Length: 266
Image (cartoon, rainbow, N blue to C red):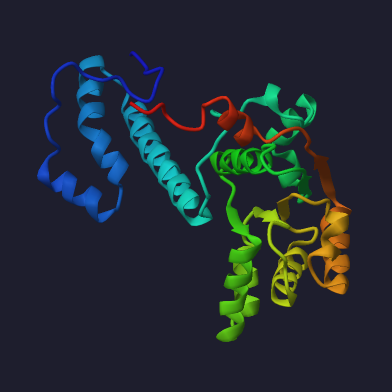
């Protein structure tokens, strides 16, 4: 008996369609990925005389792979990532974040320990790109991610306050394994923003990981939001946090000055 070494062996000719009754049963059982793979798998199994148990294993594996991929697609959509940047476009040698630190963070062990991440530094030094790449990696590892700016987080909590669902909304956000609040400090934060940020940090404390990016150090958050809330928030945020500072010139500005920000006019 020949066992497949990959997901399945593709037959050279088009495989015959499934019997109508079997197709109906698979639809009723809601096994779309198994149903899609079944004609090729069955044809290959006949040609190579697979053991029936192997046929079943391959078919079930197809369904598992398909469902996992669909779950990741849904989680990416739900996370509401801003740009879709991943480590495929990340240049570790151009970042001021130490290489060992980059490598350690990409293991995601800090998320499993419910630790936080705070990255502060000038605009354009790769803070958001790095955190978004980490967030995509987390989804690939079957974790849940929620992505906010301070403004969108404030709006979300504000709508919840209006209809009396604040506690439910905070609990829903904190079901994510990683909660990102991006670009803190780009705009002044008032009472509502400070309160929204505090609610999430407090609810996630020692239970979920929070990653924040900011152009100012977290110790300076009291310069952009009410001091009492800022102090309480930063106290919880940094208690179990990896604090990283970036420096250097803006990557965006460097690309613009090198003529790489746009395509040449023709």
